[in-house]
Image 1: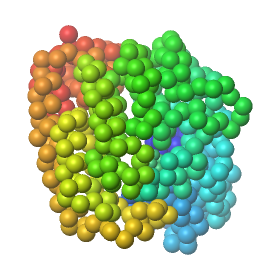
Image 2: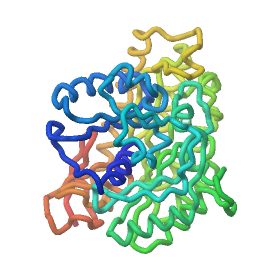
Image 3: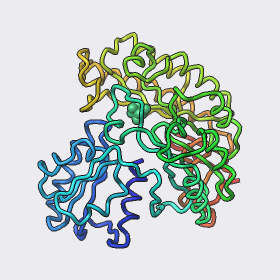
Image 4: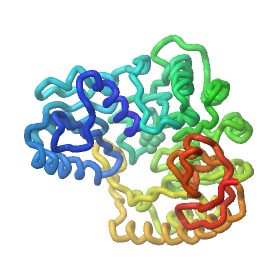
Length: 410
Ligand code: SF4
């Protein structure tokens, strides 16, 4: 989402500014921030300091989730920052870009009908926002406080955007939202009743779009209708990001995730029946109150589901979240040890998964010379050939390591 927001910011400013790769010659430097964990927030100020030292004449702006929750505090901490623009206010960049000490952090702002100018760095694939905000309030997560409540973007605007991208040669799109499979719950304008499956069906009718991805679906809304469409629509890539967070129902309850370990396993089992499907996930270890037993349950789920990719983190208390006030915080050392155990286990599983790919043939969208992504999101490398750029080709896998498959174009 931040990548797409950054592209929108750049696109909005293109009639006034020309992008440069060299911060030293920039008149304007904008940092688009994340705040989902503590580290990126600390990094913002070290990065700002370093860039300001390198180019003291530049104007500075801070956008994104850290901008939303810190607001003018950012300007107090770094007085050379000229403006602060929240994650929910990207379409208002022109209102602040030439002002001094301007702060817009309105998380109720509605820009779901705003039509952004579009730029896409990769000519063959692009992201398309389908909703903003989140209503879930998971106890560890700051996103509802930085991106506001959930609103879906009207379906005709999404379809128009996808049609435009297809006419520019884009073949693969990724539908973006905090809970994509809750699409259609609420619009800011009168709108016919639709859900995410309806949207997937309509998007897949657009000529030129050959691949559809989406991120992230919420396990709570992984109903049969949606999973059937995922399994049977040939344009939908067979990779799903399915954020587990914890394998213990007790911890899931305390996280307010809305599903149990059993529900997650049941949904994952259905997904696993799809040939060559890949499942990735997010896991937090050391959430307040997580016992050794709870942690073992997470390991058990990993062994059962055998995720192709895991983004795992030690729990990081975030401001404005309920979990940060929980008394039973897990000591950092224990959490770090658990993270190591989890990653060791997954590394072994990943070795097996990678080796199992040898001999298979995958459809690969060639994104760079000699490299692309398989339908199920493996990185695949093969002999460089410029003429293959942007094509979807068959590659037979000959070798593999944890992160990359190597093959021959057939
Ligand atoms: S679903 Fe939960 S984790 Fe995801 S953005 Fe919403 S509150 Fe955060």
